[in-house]
Length: 126
Image (tube, rainbow, N blue to C red; front, side, top):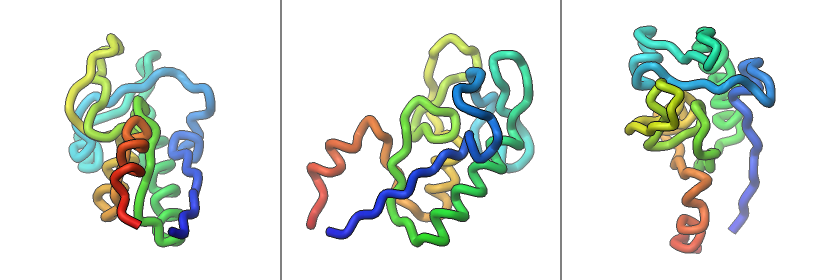
C-alpha cells in the first residue's frame, strides 16, 4: 500500500496561531456555512471567518493532491468528527462536526478521528 501523509493546519492557515484561545461553535456547522452562526473564542471574539478561510485553504490543498482519507485531530473545533463542544466552555460535548471535518466530508473524503486511527488501520484491507 502506498500512503502519503499530508499535514494540514486549518486553524494556522486561518491565522489563529498556536497556541490559541479556546474556541467553540455556537451552532451546527451547516448553519455556519450558511452564515447563520459563529465560532467564538473564550474571550468572546468572533473568529468564524478565520476558520472558514483556513479550512478552505487546506481543502484546496487536499483536493489538489487527490487525498482520499483525512485523519483529523480530535477535540479541535475545526477537526472534530461527530462530536464538538457545546459553546458553553464547560467541556460538555454535543453531536456534530468541526468546520474542517465537515468540509472534508462534503468533498467526499473519508474522515477518521485521531482517536480511532488504530481500529481503522486494523480493519483496512490491503
